[in-house]
Image (cartoon, rainbow, N blue to C red; front, side, top):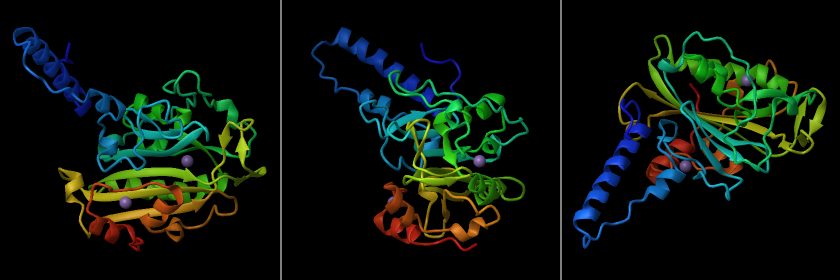
Length: 299
Ligand code: MN
Ligand code: MN
């Protein structure tokens, strides 16, 4: 049966699929000769609709376990591409506006993600103990404080990466706060955030390591973020133009940077695309991508 309350796009699609199925069954019964084109439900299942990917899926991740280095997990709170060989996400994407921000306390319930295919190693909270690295959030706890359930979703270990304490508690955190300021108070923006990792080998409080958790988790050399800022409005992808502000940062996963300014780590989107092997805003024209992605934010 279709859901009773249509509250989001996924449910709406389910209703559409249900109606299409019903119609198809009825027609098939009455008019066996009618040639009904096959519905593309397989594609929809492999790449479910989500607001978090409204501006694009940077690696065309899909819900296909044979693509173990680019496996898509979509949840209400964010979407991510998981890399089984790294034991972390490649990137996490989330939409943020003031509606996601409330006063719910940190749930702190770090735990393995059971959304991963059953035979895959599931990174657990214990895997980071005494590693010299923080359990660093890609989608921050502070961006999901509207309900306990939404906050708790950020503590799933697929949203966590081994992060140098000085990176996590320095410029990375400052930029998280800056991003929230863009959508709250007088700054009535909505933003789309992509955050991810690349490279192998980072410096924590216990020295440089390529992996932790007995090799199950790769320590990245770099952490990056791309934030697309829009004033509140409709039809977001089509409102992006050459004046749209995009902030991209790339911060090394190392100690000694706790008091550094996040502004000093600004880079072009192109630089992140090259280093992390991703493509942002692929649905925009090449010309517009070139303009936006070669620029480095200076505001
Ligand atoms: Mn953090
Ligand atoms: Mn691009």
